[in-house]
Structure formats: structure tokens, C-alpha cells
Length: 293
Image (tube, rainbow, N blue to C red; front, top):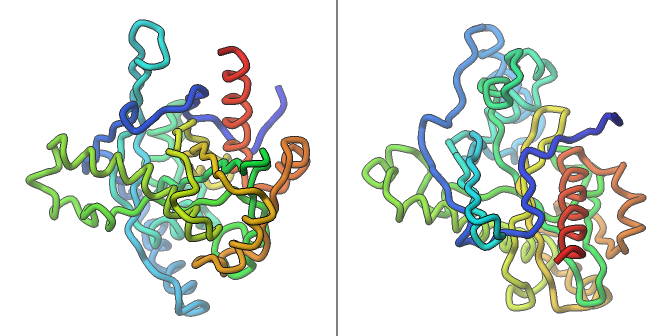
């Protein structure tokens, strides 16, 4: 079997709408501290070193991926439902565990991914497979100033943000943590955040975008970094998107935008971080499923 740079943690090739995705946001899905004190202390040491080099680094809260459950009734795609299990982490812990040069020491030898990664931050990133009206896919070349994979080709994306839904701590939402209302706000943020990322990074108006469809989660082998992927259609042509990109709010995060065909994307995929290679694999599974409908 060919070795890949990613693992498909969850594949939903028919694409799921917000009503088919729910979330349980709970402290039981938070990271567990590593018993090796020296290793645990390296988290703050690495962060301090990084901040000294780059004073603009910000320690924002992130949702931690803690697994999922699947529910499929009657075998029809409408009855397919995913529940994501999310805890809370932050960028500092991500830099100090997943991005630590000693990141493999944080892993627990286990066949169970969740046990294997229990001492790592594992913030859930997101990415969009954005299709233009002339059937091209949008990819970005990352700036050399970003912390992760500078200069690499990626799909637009970032992270769902706990602060957007008042989930910056479990205490703040203690009385609501178990309520359906609170969990549904976090679930909606999964979809809202990817639209936000696309609008800010590409510069397209929100009205030009279709409702996102959740197509799964991939995890890169390097640093065990998980990311949720979504398929979104944009009703604007490639040339116009290139023009809009020049005025994008978060344009500094990338240096160039490409609109590419499926074949061109296939050739670029090897230059992507593993989790984005996995996003491309999830997209191809979606295309395959659409053929069979």
C-alpha cells in the first residue's frame, strides 16, 4: 500500500448540511497533560522563543478535535448524521505540542487515534474546496511569514473560532455546556467559520457563495494535525476572483491565488501540507459519489 502524508479520519462524500452535523462541546475532550514534566514544560519554552522572534504571535483559543460518532439510518444520505466531539485548546499549546520538534514524544503508542493524540493540542483546522462558476478550484500560495507551512500551496481556510460563539472557556458556558442550544451554536460555527475564511482570504462577497457542505476530516501524518473540509460553490468566474483577491482582508497570509483544473490540482497536490492533500482526497471521493447518484 502506498504511504501517504495524510489519514482520512472521516469521509462524508455526499456532503453534509448543517442539519446533519452536530457537536458536543465538553471538557472531557480537552487535552490531557503529559506525565513527563520536562516535556510538558517545553510547551511554554517553545512559545516564549517563538514570541521573542515574532511579537505579533497571538495565543487564540481553538476547538480541539476529540473524535466523532456516526449515525446512519435507513441507508439513505439524508439520514446520515455526524456528531463532532470538541474540547478547548489554544494556539500556544498547538505550537508547543503538535509543532514541537519533539512532537512524536507527546504521542501514546496506541491503535486508537484519540488515545495516541491525547497529550497533543490537535486544534481542528478547516479548509474549503472552492469551485468557481467556470469550474476551477481556488488554491493559495501561503506567505513566508506564516507559522505553518510557509510558501506551500493550500486550500483557503483557517480555524473555527471559540470566541465567535462565547466558548472561550468551559466555565463561561458552564450552565449551557450540556444544552442543545449551546452545542448547536458551536456546530453552526463550523459552517460559518469556513465562509468567513473564504471571504477574508479570497475577497469574494458572501452573497456569491453557496451553503458549505461538510465532506470530512483529514489528519496529516506529520504533527497529527486535523482539519475539517467543506465544498463551496462560488458564482463568480476565475478572472474576477483574481481581481477581488487583490483587495482581500487577509491577503497578507498568502502571496498568490491560482484557479486550477482538476488535472492541474492533481499535479499540485504533492506540494500541499498532508492535511490539505487529504482535503483533495475527500473532494475526489465526493466527485466519485456524485457520479453514482
